[in-house]
Length: 236
Image (cartoon, rainbow, N blue to C red):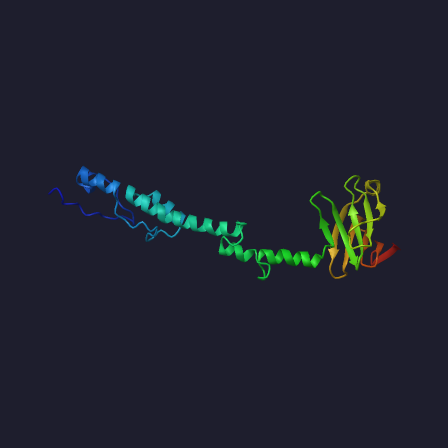
């Protein structure tokens, strides 16, 4: 065999054979091929359509050149997926097209649009402050009423403002923490009812003992469920 007569490479199951003495033919040309491989560096390799596909080729017979070439093709899909995730999570407005879209509240069904819609629907009827205060409120012009769980003692109190929430001069405790401890509450709920335009605190003692405190733009009422309908106990 002449010095430059190479043995034809035979492919088995789509994989390339190991680099051995027969296929290198001589040490000089073989090492030069390893250090200066000639292959397409675009990251596109026929048959490598995902990173798992690349992993499946690792367990087969593969020479070093094919390994690095296929690895880049496999990583191409990993990096593409990573860029999509980054686009969705990045908070730098306008840096990515996908990010800019999600932060536009004027485009229906985007994340920003959904957040804006929830805030608009609630219209500040339900609030959770950074310090942990939970409250529900109703508004009628400048007269605002707020039902709030007190942070100090967990009492439920009614606040009333006559200047659009700037000040709350009227405060009345409605239920104390002791009331809850002795009443054996099984379930307590706090929510806003958009159909009735009212904020509600409801607690269940048993199947036949259900109470609710409802705050509307007209005031506050205390109801008891009689098994068929809500029976008003008092209104303020």
